[in-house]
Length: 548
Ligand code: GLU
Image (cartoon, rainbow, N blue to C red; front, top):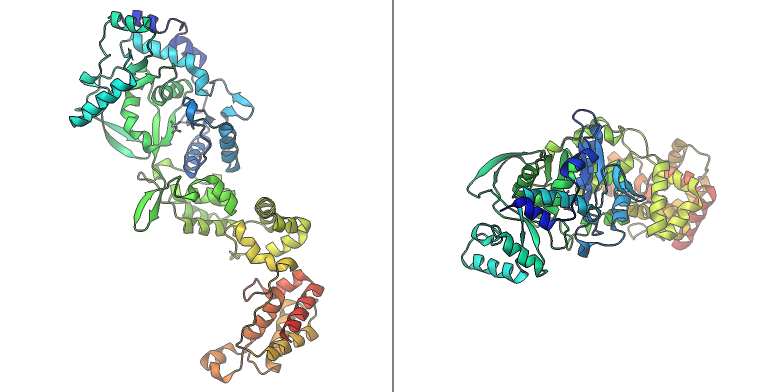
């Protein structure tokens, strides 16, 4: 067979050469050891936690090493494409601090290794397709869907491996005349790889996450170009990652089964194989067993979920870090205020079997992250969230930034900051009582006589002075306690509760309920300082009226 003639027959319009392309896309000028990597999403519109894991891993590897991170849009499957999906992806990742240096952008392609949308690269793939045909390593296949389905049925009935291989690879060694006849008849064809691999052979492979693997060779003549001339993922991956000078391929481990084929392709094309970082799936506990997070069952897989719940971006980011690098938490404890990108991320620390997503842990991380923020930062993030997801609350926050910031400053700073908020959704429950519209009527219960409670509140009002410092304020509360025959000696009370009608804690609770509507609140003295004299007094008066 004259393979060159076949190549010319199949690709008459391809005049460009691999050599010319090598020159057009020269080696990158990056520092020694720099990682050049990419995200290569299919634009399906669903941005999930897995994208973030992959994005963060590749972003850290690239930028930590002084390398390049680019975005390539794998739009070869027009049926799955959702309009606007690329924009959503770019914006979502940017929201999480993952910015691309090159590739597809909101303003179009940026960089000299483009185009970065695969559908615009058809002519480039064809140059290499032609080369493989000329080398005798690819051939056209005219099998119809029906023929392939019948073949599969036979294989299944015979309990054989399925696929286009060995004796089933019926177009592998057909004559030029047969091929010409099909072409003349206008029959569609795909281009297949001529595999020389054997499933009897194995070889060793080193993956940056999975470690040393023993891999079985591929014997299937996979499709390189579909009948419309558009490449399959496999072929496009080899051509693009070579020409875009990718040094590391960071991708999901669902690609591991086809890795043997990819390795063959790189060899056949004369390309240096990049390093591979195959990331395991995100798992979760479902009862007693682990399973992959699923788009259908788990709302927490979608990144929009975190935004709506009100997890700050920094919290999700830190949680993912915790998930991927087990030493991150220790590092964070030792460096509570260090910028997160000063942590040395290491892909080798990823769990080869996939990470276990743990919601409770995320909540914990988020509480820590929020507790370390300044009141101003919390105010601005919370207000932004509330304006979108709880406009009424958002409006109140925005109407008086100083008031809200003072509330949010309670218990902040110092060695042991308060950890009241895990998500912005929690904020209304935590601080809503500061706003008269959200103040709930206090429920004083039945343990104490109403007249006793009203007496406490009246005495408090009589002695209340907003100018008191915290000490004086509490001394007054203690004085009231003693005046009504309750005790301030908590030790004595604990030893023999029945000998006291009540304690200073009860007195505080009466006042707290009157002022906040709740039995739990941040420091009551501070709450009154923020509410101010008039609101404090009128709330207590209202409570007294309610008790009468
Ligand atoms: N388009 C492929 C996917 O979305 C990309 C895999 C890769 O990163 O190479 O899974």
